[in-house]
Image 1: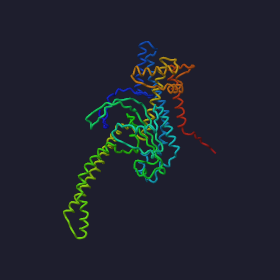
Image 2: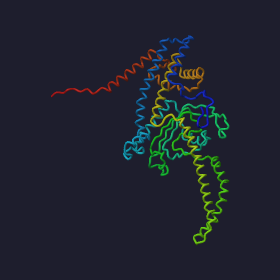
Image 3: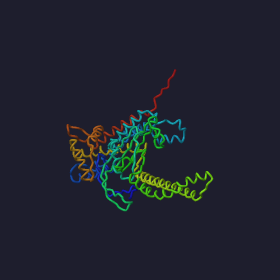
Image 4: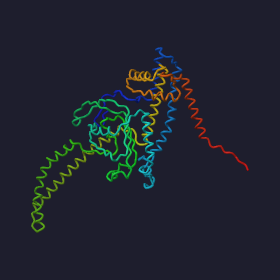
Length: 448
């Protein structure tokens, strides 16, 4: 399908490279069940039909356990974000007096720091990698694939961090010469990009920035995008200012220069008409000269107006191209970003734990390096996908849940029925604690 930026993908099967696993939870479970069934058929392990069903049960229990763990974190992040959420302030403003609203600039700065720390942890669990300001500035210097030029006023930001997940090379078809010619280019793109921007408080913003309607003092902006070329990173930032490129300035300026010569010739009579107008004031009238002067001034005014309208039309074309491009790449905004990122982190945790456990059951005992190598080779040979599997993180989860045992450098997974029993015990402890916490306090009837 053609996209509004004039780019189309010619390589939809490009293999992602990174630490995240580009398959859904259910897809990973199906892949592991198929692998176990294949190994059983080939006589490589002793997985029975019951074991395949137990693997599905273990998958459901892991999902539920990680969901429970991440739920409290999500609620805490929402609470920390609420004072800085520009959408929440806007919604409340329609119902109450604006002067009574909490000002993000006055919100506890500790909440902003706590949110940033939790967000960084969640993103790392979801296998995102942090970029810094130098990466954004480098993108500004590169030739953008979106056919616009832009500049960013970093003075408006108190803090700005971009995170990406999944980097791949894609072959894109770019239109040139007004769409008459198409060329294939290799482009490095990010599968996901998360934008975290905290604006400076009101007292630290310049009067010029305060006048802009899209600069909420002290607010935190969260955005999530997909399939973003590295050269277009700056297009994702709020407070972006579109400007004319040099070639567009020439495109408008050169015709203006040459087109202005006839206009100057036309207004020459107006210059001669000035003395005539002065003569009118003294009682001497030359109507022909006056008409020529008025015509010349009108021609100059019409020419200036035409050039100005041409400039505005070109700028609107730029803004439309930018907005249409971001429309198809935007996944979520502000509080919705928190929910989506927590869900992604929860999913990555579950997939990593299940994959590591399965391979230890099939081929263990193994040392950490051997386990890592076998899993990565499995992704590449069986599923044509390059994954830098985070084996240490996966083993840390299994050890915490009691699903793996260490014997020196060797690691062994607990049998499936024992793994399920251990998770059942943890759930029983969680439910017992929740039931006790929810119970009303005991009251006795005292007598005198």
